[in-house]
Amino acid sequence: MAKKKLTLSVGEDLLDEVKRIAAIEGRSLSSIVEEYFEYVVFRRWAEALGGERGLGGLEPTIES
Image 1: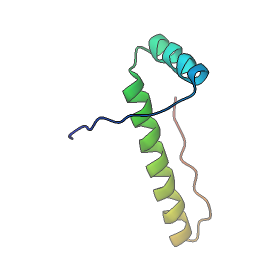
Image 2 (image 1 turned 90 degrees about the vertical axis):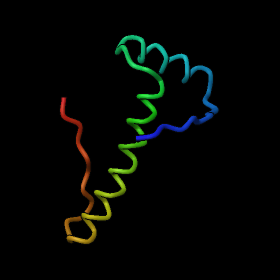
Image 3 (image 1 turned 60 degrees about the vertical axis):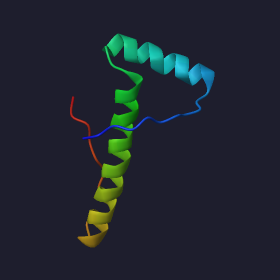
Image 4 (image 1 turned 45 degrees about the vertical axis):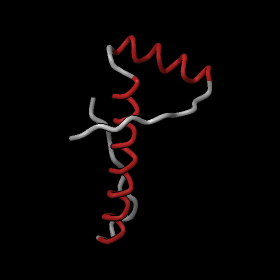
């Protein structure tokens, strides 16, 4: 899949904390942002599917 550059503005304290987390986990900031975007899209899909099937609000889970 092709990647595109994205410019974000984030609070300095939040960015510092996320950078620390990324370093501990050996990840890039891009991978963290991309994972969150995937979660947002999946959650919206799950909610729509749950509504269509009369299942109420489906919640995505994260398996450890």
